[in-house]
Length: 298
Image (cartoon, rainbow, N blue to C red; front, side, top):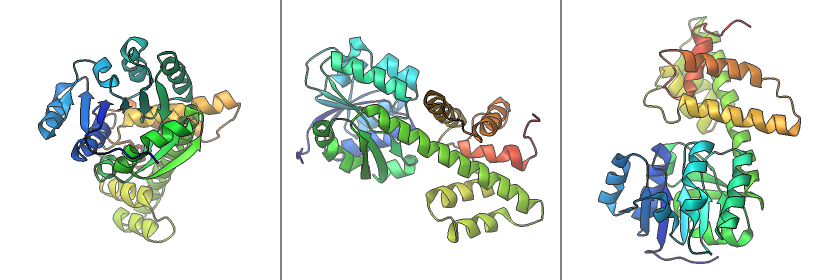
């Protein structure tokens, strides 16, 4: 494994809830991190911690190795443009956001044309997990590029799951994981609705679930959030959850698969996004659609 010491220059683009914590860990590790973000507030915070501000995405992408945590396909397409990628060949870019496989294919081609290697490495974990460097990283790409990124992955996460040599595969796997989480959120919401209708405390019930048959961060973490209705501030927004459901729907359509529960989950998300009180909360707030009897009639 190639060893990279402190002081390595790194670019980082996208300082949302997750990206801010991830870039912060790279800064704290002693690397020269050149950051770019649309809004100035997180840039100022990280500059105060020791990062350098880029004037444009191209400045951050000019680093020998760069990372991005961008909101969606459209943002990635705009920020990781051919114009921004132009420059010295031999660089590596690692896209760590949940993007569509189609976007990953397009970005990989664009990077290759610019002489820049490309990895897809979406992550599992909320912003608190990112802050602790405990993310699970789902990675796909050329073996040499994975080796080059490995020292930085060690700073950002606790395990790297290498799933293939084509970057798009990492995005397929991440979408499938999030599709499973969405089912868990809906299952918790429906089960909580059942027990609350019979005067059972939701907190006791979700503790029962996570302490017995369903251990792990999804049922323990989201179970408590749902039981206590702690949907603000969102760790992962309703809009992003809907986007990830859309990724699973698109992947299934491309493969000729029918996902029987997907249409129901789509109606739940659409109802939440259309409501005044749930549209801007954590994605676990979909539980309230069933819990409050707001599931739309077919």
